[in-house]
Amino acid sequence: MRRCDKPSNSCARGTASWFPEGTRSEDGRLTPAELGIAMLALRTGAPVVPIGVDGTDRSLPRHSPMMRPAMVRVNVGRPLTFDDLCRSGPLTREAAEEAARRITLALIPLLPAWRTARVRASLPQSAGVHSTKPG
Image (cartoon, rainbow, N blue to C red; front, top):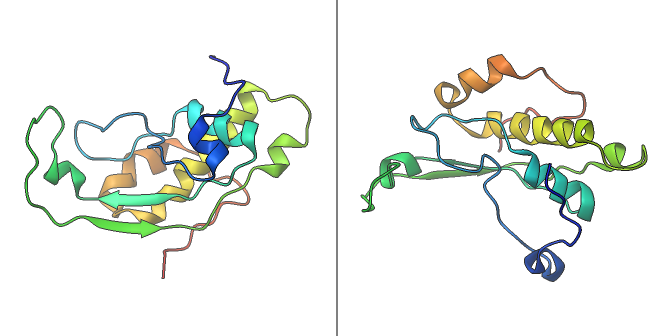
């Protein structure tokens, strides 16, 4: 696992945006969050605000050089913090994996069910994750 000793400059200024999956999926379905965003959140203590963005696969399909008009929906979830994972001493791969699971689980209610079915089936539920739909 690569180390991230220094938070990015954008984190130091207060706000940064990342897509936790690392790339767009071939079929527009949610895939698990990568460990990088989890490690960054654990190292900086910054909250992660899950944002479900639906429709960008129609607006800019993977491998397509041109954008197309499409309806895009954005749902914002509750901020996630990982204080409980940081209290147990040095950061571990297991802590990063748990944070990545929580990030992925927080995205599920923010997207249509068909986009999340595969990842829902592969990830166990975790305590402390908000699973309510945005208002």
